Length: 274
Image (tube, rainbow, N blue to C red; front, side):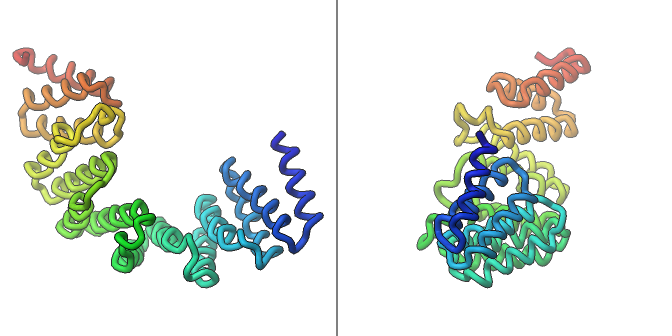
């Protein structure tokens, strides 16, 4: 059936050149390949929308997704960068403007131009008012997170902590991002050698007042718990480590099996523990 649909799209493209119907068919073909993660073919098909249907209403979307496909294909990041810049040049007020700039930052990060990527994210954050554009809030928060991660990579730990804290200071941040951000702050404190503060932020996740029944499903909840237990062990506080691992097990966290194994190891080495 998929093959039949693709053949139908192809026939429509040939039967309706320079028309909106033809452009839509080309777009559907591209979207199919993108959904199948065939990013090379998706890039080719999205590019054909702009090439063969220059005034189509789907042209801006196609231009952005051509860049995104090139990025996901990972074969030529410079080409992905060129396509993202082309989208921004052709559609400076396009609906994917924020995403295209995020894409530029992600490409620079993968090319290990961390300072360049940081400038991209800082410009995005500084130039966006999420009160006026609440639709951009999820992307805005992602940009803030990326800024913090880059500052950590650049070993600017205090600046990274400030960047991450600014996420936690915003209202209505979803639980997974809160957990992720607390873990990132804790990692910065570990890098600074401040294990006490690191532990504090890991435990904000494990014992925090924001914990819900869904917490157990969170990757970052599990990460915080296991890392906190490791710090407790390094501090020779085996009872504290055991309590954290027991909480992971009791809450049915995604790391439950690992927590059970680690708890057994601790109790085997320290049989005096309850």
